[in-house]
Image (cartoon, rainbow, N blue to C red):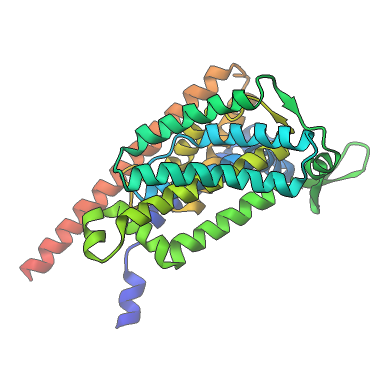
Length: 350
């Protein structure tokens, strides 16, 4: 009886929205393969999407954590820019790759501690605090260096140029040579973070506390959850992941600039929402967020190959996609809510 009941148990809102996102991504990608072909028929296209968006995947995971807890963090783009510029200057002044990595973690940790404390313990709105953090990080980036900087550290250049080759997913060029699929080290880091955050959210008490906090903070308090500490941890993890994203961003671009990662926070929020994370909190999954990033990247690639190369077309399609997924989430969740209410009423009558 218990086994049959468990089998018939409906899918949770988190898994339902994640499943919808995954299905839409594969439908879009297969449509692109059928209509435009070309690069979409090669595995390297998928790896290029990952290579170009490894930092976005990481920072989207950070936003998912905060949004599940019912908060928001728009400082992550500024943190990425500050980390990239600071690490470039540090490396060019004789620093090592290890100390640069520690510097990126330290910057993320500092932002997380300050912003988390102000949001959790002084109860200031997270939007206001992280908005101030974004401006502060951008300003600090120009103080570190007013001019754009390129990495001159030979060891870091070697790390940047290191690729993971997967021969069996490659393709044969016109001259007959086999071109293996290539993936940057940053992608490995991003995928590892997705897996770790997934297990943290789904398999640990801390992750369950995040969902409880975002679902209903008063209920979480009644369950004995320290909501202030939990809220602070969400912002702390978000900023640390933004610091890691900054280092991965530098591994991909090899340069620091005050305009680095401009709009990264908005793309991360959009990817999280497309992946099934609700702004109201309590619902979300980093696997869905990962496919949210891939969906957003795929639609941008489709727009480009369609001949609409002007940058505003990508912004228009991103906005349209975001509105579509928000409406879809609202319709799906409202129908499920009405269905649950009708079921409860029938059971009460019985």
